[in-house]
Length: 528
Image 1 (cartoon, rainbow, N blue to C red):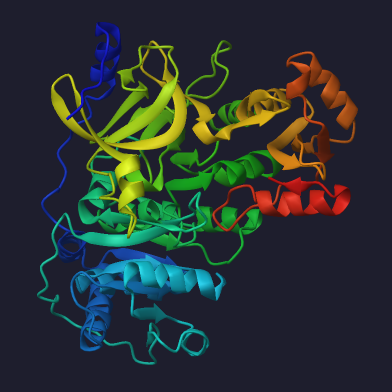
Image 2 (image 1 turned 180 degrees about the horizontal axis):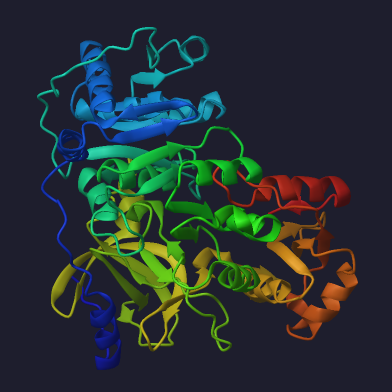
C-alpha cells in the first residue's frame, strides 16, 4: 500500500482535526435501531403530515405489514426496491418496509425520463417498484412488478420480521450524475446512516428533536432529515407541499416547533433575502450544497445570532455530511466561509498528489471513515479511481477522492476553493469559476450570482455570469467596471445577464440548464 508523504507540520494539523472517534451503534442496521427505538417510544409522535400523525408504535406496525406484503411478493435480503412515493406517511412506511425485508431502497422521481429510469433499475438489478402511482408506472414499465404503497385498509403487523440486517448491508442507493453521461449508483451502508446521526456534533439530535423533511427523497439530505429524527425517538415533520413557499414554510416550522432544519445554499439565500423571520424559531439552521455568499451569511448572523447557523459539506459518497462549521463570526481576512472540520467518525485529508498538505497549501479533499460508500454500482474502474487505499503515518486508510479543492487554515478549519473540474480555459488562460463568482458577489448591489462557461458559434469559449441584483441601480457595464478593478481582463465575463431569480433544481441547486437555455435563446451561444 502506498503511503502519503508529509512534513511534521502537515501531519500534526491532520492528526488534530481527525480526532473524531465517538461511540455509535456500528454493529446494528437501521432496521434494528428503529425497532429498538420504536419499542422505547411506542406512544411518541414519529411522523406528522398535514393533519395526520403516526406514533412510533403505529409506524412500526404499518411498516411490518407492508414488509410482509413485499416479502410475499418475493423481496429478499440484498434486493433493491425502487421507491416512488409522494412526501407522506406512506413514504416513511415504505422506506422502513424495504429495510425490514433486508433490501435496499432506490428512491426515484416519476418525472425522470423512462430511459434514465431503466438504466437505474438495470444497474441496481431492481425488479420491483413500491409506489403510490402504480397505474401510471405500471403502464410505463410493464416489465417491472409495481407494488402499491397505499391501501384502503393498510396491513399491520405486530411482529417485527425475523430478517437479520447487518451494519455493512446496503440500506439505499442514490444515483448521481456522471461525467460520462451515465448515472452513478452510490451504495450506502446501514452503519453509514448510524454514523451520520448518532453522536452528532453539528446539531442536537435526540428524543426532543423535531426535524423538517423538506428535500426530495432522491436527494441525500433526506437521509439526515428522516433518520436523524426516527432513530432517536424524535419527530419527523413532512413538508406538506411539492414546492416551497416561504409563508407556508414559516407556518409549518412554527406550528410544529421544528428544532433543526437543513436548507440548500440557494434556498437559504432566498429565505435570508426575502423572509429571514421564517427561520426565527429554529434551534439549528444547517445549510450547504454550494459555496456560501458571505453577504448572506453576514445578514444571517445579524438576524439569528451566533451558534444557530451551521455550514455543512459532504458528497453523497460520504453519506450526506462530512464536515461542519458553526458560524460565529466572519473574519475580514477570509475570502470564503470555511466548511469546517470533520464530523464525528469522519476523517479528512488535504492532499496534493501523494503529499499531505500543510496549513495554507491547497490540495484535493480526501475523506475517510464509516460514512464512506463501498463504491459505485457496476463501475469497478471508476470505483478504483475515486476510492483509494493509502497509509497515513503508518495507518491504512480507505479514502474517497472528492475532486474538491481546499486548504486548511492554521486553526484547522477547511476552506473550500472550488472543484478540480471547475477550472476552465478561456483564450488559453486557466480560470477558476469560483473566484469570478466571489468577486461578483462582493459587489454591494448583487444579491445572487452564478458563473459558467458557454461556447460561441465560432467554437470559442466565453465566461457568462447570471446576476440577481438588489434594486435597479445596477448594470452589466457597472459590474464589469467593478470586476476589472479586481480581476485580469480575461477573467471578466463577456456576458453578464440580470435575472429576477436563479432557477433551482428539485434538490435546491442552481439549474444551469435552464439558465443557459434562456441565454441560448437570447444570444445563440451554446452551453459547454
